[in-house]
Length: 352
Image 1 (tube, rainbow, N blue to C red):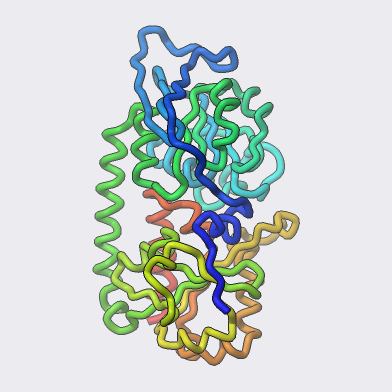
Image 2: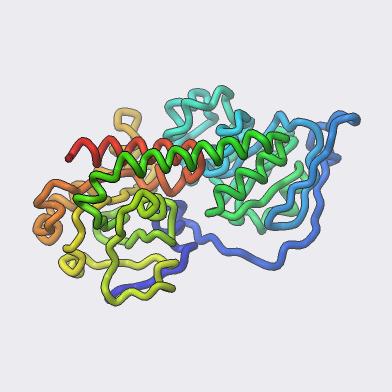
């Protein structure tokens, strides 16, 4: 039987292993840089107000010691040319501080020129570690709503919705006084997608139907749609038609549907299959294996050994593609869009 889950469960099952829920109506809880734990802003510096999920926060001057909770927000910071002082990833993929970000932060670490303090995970950051940094700005998501008062006591804090990359980019740009740059980035990203749509047009014409699934243990499969994640919405923007079960309703596409292996033959109209793998067992990570390999190996082995999977038309035609879920689910901004498109082009174009 098909099971349906809410959007927060996508993060539970695919991204963070922690449910994301919204709570309450935003209220005016203006934060200032006058906290004893945060450096004083230059008196003559201009101040800006940032509207976010928990109210309005005042940010003065140019923040230089920023703590960012989550790679989805770190990506947006880096796109704006701003570097972190403290960082929390989804899971403890790395122990200790980020002395070598290129090797320790997946996909975007090569853009980090600082050596950020590791403040834990984004869902359970260490307030003590954050306070020790003496930040002048904290960027967080709705997973940190319960800690908002405590975080605001340390430094001006902005709480952003998980899936709203464009809105989040503008909010962060407002906080760091780079709004003009944000608009340029958004324009360039849209142009990149349009260019990719032209590149993929011959493939779309020949193999238009795509089934997208995610899995961590190669036992449970989750349907990826154009509504429940950036992973699926970008595929549709490129012109592909996502394949769904015939009995699924439009409102269910906002949720996450668990699909059994036995129902895969009902989705056999797919010309291609994209499988998004994840592995949050941090103990299984080793210095000798790449992050991609750690995320995909279990799913690849399970797919190869499953008789139903091997019987599908897409498998028989060698049009099954494996990608880490972290790539598109965790990085929905300008940098992640570029990386995701590059990966799609590398895999899908090379197989034609």
